[in-house]
Image 1 (cartoon, rainbow, N blue to C red):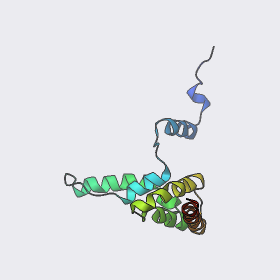
Image 2 (cartoon, rainbow, N blue to C red):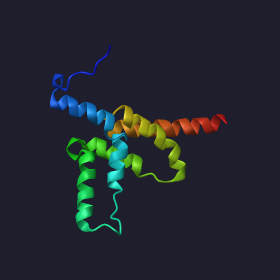
Image 3 (spheres, helix red, strand yellow):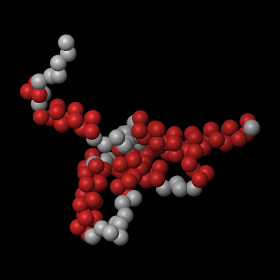
Image 4 (tube, rainbow, N blue to C red):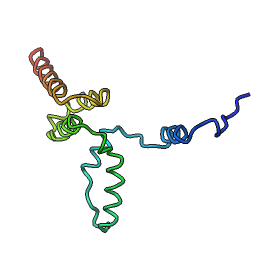
Length: 125
């Protein structure tokens, strides 16, 4: 017979970690950061409400943990808004998701690789 573990068998940090995994944010860190950068005050919100929303979103953003390279990679993927850039965004987002410590140089190299693949594919037909 399987019985649940006794809560006393866990530290507070272990309990918080497990509950966060179950009930916490399900979005990627990139998505959380992108949504934070897109934050806009609603007409129905006052500035105190906006401050509360801003604080919550900035906490999820993990400002203290983001490196300069991570921020530049975030901007590099968010900035291209043209429909012709949409095809390149998915592999770049995948690359960032798989390697959160990706450098801007590596992301730029990946952008060039994708561009070359598109060009080569067009040549082939």
